[in-house]
Amino acid sequence: MIIIDYSDKRPIYEQIAGRFQALIVSGVMEADEKLPSVRSLAVELSINPNTIQRAYMELEKDGFIYTVKGRGNFVKKDDELMRRQKEKLLTGLEEQVGVCLRQGIDKKEILGCVEKAAGEVLA
Image (cartoon, rainbow, N blue to C red):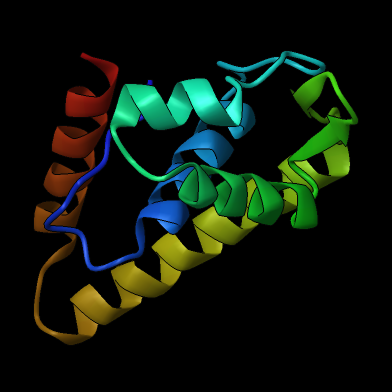
């Protein structure tokens, strides 16, 4: 479910938080679903528990999860947050398409890239 890419320039906690955000926004993780414990995920990924804790703190700060003292972390149901997150991602995509067009990449190539990416993700 969570994979660390050591060639990614982002810190590990950002990668973890980003992956959980994607799982939540896409509906793979449902409202009130319990996230893995900090300790178990740290062992599974062979990383420091503080890194997991920081990722969870970011997710909570951004409104994706909530914490129940002594019970763990759970996915928060917030349709408005999900709508804003999808809108943010689509806006980023629109901006990137604009950059590509200004750099001389034609629409056909861009659409081919989108199709390829979608095919890889959905495969």
